[in-house]
Length: 355
Image 1: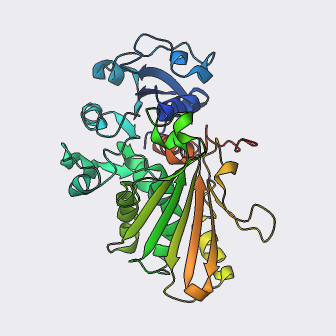
Image 2: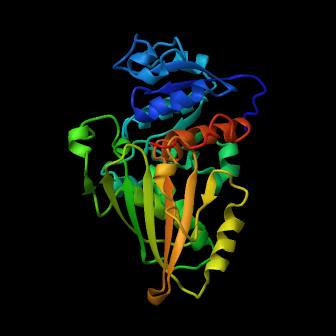
Image 3: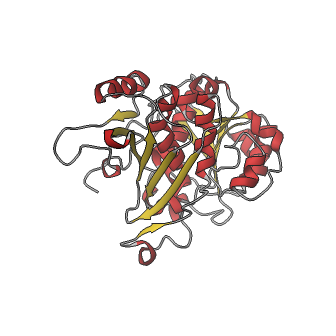
């Protein structure tokens, strides 16, 4: 672990998109961090607010071209926020220079090189580096993250789902061959490219990749590690008419009888010390279960459940802001763990409401 007593200097590779911009927003307000270098091929030489107008007045930095030697001289730690498939060489180059890296792409999330062919359709060019990466969920891998040089942040739907499912797997409560994840996600999850325009997203409830979505591989990987055996997950995501937010309805089938009180005890036992996990279950009113509307701008993951006794079904519900707990918030949380900072430094924000 780094254990920085002074200000830590950080850089961001690829800060012109939604995720990179959110990382930048959080870092500029972090009391223990100085943003010393930000790269973008498209915007090199321009002020950051040209691509991220909400940050006007917060920094006078300009985007620069990626120069590995300059970055290694200027930064103690680097975030990579570039599209999937383009981070492989960047991360390797930084790693070989001894840099601490937090990667927000999918390029180093999966441990098994063969899984990249299965879920992404390409062969990983540096399979020997996959073992050097720690999957960046502090609630599951805090001790490994503390010692890691390379942390790979999870997919947004993957982390939201697995945080609800992991205690059930850990306690051998559910059938591990029949887990169904029904996920709803806002338009920002698709990135800042084509297909996210208002005309294409307004009013939509659109299934996409209803079978073999790539985040399935991450969920199966992490839950299988918990179970000590291969776990099968069926996942179907849907695009919905919100900008930020994820709701995962995780359908599971019980192997043993358990009542509501015992389930609450199980979840509290697992997450009572985790300040970014909130357990939700009200008996009446509108807000009985997790709702991503009340998580916007925050790093929380809200978890709840309901029991369908007649069908022996346990529905675990989880919600998050896909740009925060699903991306940038998790990245800063991982940085705090790696650097020995208070884990909540710079990201303990209450959700924005109304939105």
